[in-house]
Amino acid sequence: MTKPNLEFALLTPTQMSIVDRHAARTISIIELMENAGWAVTQEILKRYRPCSVLVLCGPGNNGGDGYVVARLLAQAGWAVYVSSIANPKSGSDADIAAKQWTGMVVDDPESYIKKVGLVIDAVFGAGLNKDLDLHIANLLRKAKHVVAIDMPSGVNGETGQIMGYAPHAELTVTFFKAKPGHYLLPGREYRGELVVKDIGITFEILSQIELKCWLNEPGLWQIPTSELTDYKYRRGTVSVIGGSQMIGAARLSAHAALNSGAGLVYIFALGNRDCYSASSPCFIVDHDSLETALKDLRRKIWVCGPGLLANEVNEILPQLIAANVKIIADAGAFQSDQYDMLKGVSIITPHIGEFERVFGKIKGDKISAARLAAKQIGSVVVLKGADTIIASPDGRVAINQHASSRLATAGSGDTLTGIVATLLATGMPVWESACAGVWVHGEAGLLCDHSWPSAEILTENLGKARDNASISKNIVNL
Ligand SMILES: NC(=O)C1=CN([C@@H]2O[C@H](COP(=O)(O)OP(=O)(O)OC[C@H]3O[C@@H](n4cnc5c(N)ncnc54)[C@H](OP(=O)(O)O)[C@@H]3O)[C@@H](O)[C@H]2O)[C@@H](O)CC1
Ligand SMILES: [K+]
Image 1 (tube, protein in one colour):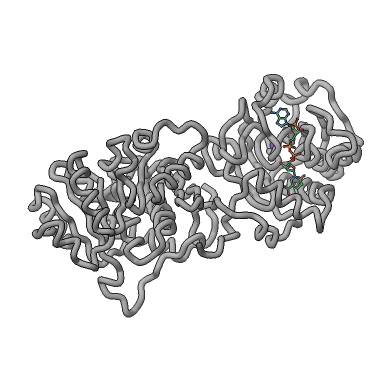
Image 2 (cartoon, protein in one colour; image 1 turned 60 degrees about the vertical axis):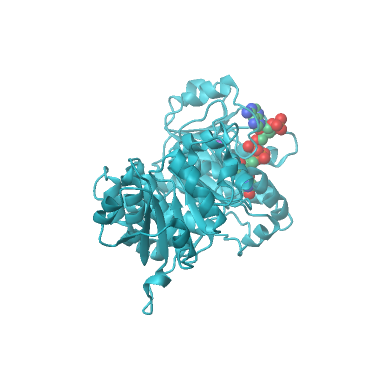
């Protein structure tokens, strides 16, 4: 495994508590809490005009941060009310912070929550461990403008699931590193603008943690750029199996491969060869047998599934697997609940429905399900959706936010297989190819000048999208 990328690493709440413990050797929790409160206050001051504020403080350190914010906003001249949803344990760091708050503590937050201009949600953060009580949920429900500390209370930081209820925050300020729950749906929809603040924890501490989860952005992987000495074989060769009846899907996949930079694109047609030949002068449509095609050592990357019937997959996929080529399996390859038949492929790209058809209903969270599936078949799993997850059999996971509803159109998945195949054909490692392909796919959608591109239009943007993936370094919060 290559050196883990620190920039885009996401930490689960459990990993964050390990970070806290290590950090506590050089900086006290009370100091971190002060820094956290200060960071939140700065972000509020940047965005809001002075107004009345109700700070809802829970019993843990999230509540502790809330007491600090209350004190600093009051010092800035704001009218601040605090409600202690539950008192901190006596002598705890949160208790120390609470004692430094000398302003108004209200016993009836219900009568303030609708009147104030802003509500600070400091009820629960990383320590949320059960569903929110009804009375807390009903209180938070009444808040109009909410700034959440670390996480909107009720959003599970690891899974993005809502535990009973969570408020829709306008702004969430988190510390050191973002958490998976900030990017996974539905949590992402609750956190509003996300700001990650440095509170004095050094990056070296990350060496104490086995990083497993990242935000999918350029820099997590690197796509080869064009070279003066490029030639078609170096750009990469992609072969697509073309179905005998549904010929559009394989063509879209092949077009996507070409337009994202493949040097050569073959279609091995199971029928309708002339239609495939006529669809682009750039495609090479096989005339020989599959056995002959597989003997060509340059043809190591195959797309199998778009537009294929179950019997076609059953016939072809085992031959590809036996030939030891790299396979991207999609669509038609997900018609059975026998995941064993996928063992030996490099990457699968199912949407949730296809995933559940093969691996069964997702019981827990999507990350765990995708990780388990990747392990079961020994392949990278791209679980497609508005928060696509790319899971490797070795446990690495990337969460993609670089996408939009522009990708929600028939044939869009076929284009993804073509992009990923091209990147794999450049020699990029498997998980990185899948991650980069997902990002480039999202970028192709975002490059459209309207919201409703067809899959064909998406393929036209792929060259530019790939260029942007090579130059883009910054995280984009969509
Ligand atoms: N990361 C950093 O570097 C720093 C992090 N900081 C901050 O610390 C926060 C994490 O603090 P934390 O561990 O004390 O957890 P927190 O979320 O405050 O709550 C735990 C308490 O809530 C309770 N409880 C939980 N769920 C409940 C429910 N549904 N309903 C009722 N009760 C529930 C739970 O009860 P228990 O299970 O113990 O009975 C426990 O008492 C983090 O989010 C960040 O804001 C900074 O201060 C410093 C630097
Ligand atoms: K919170």
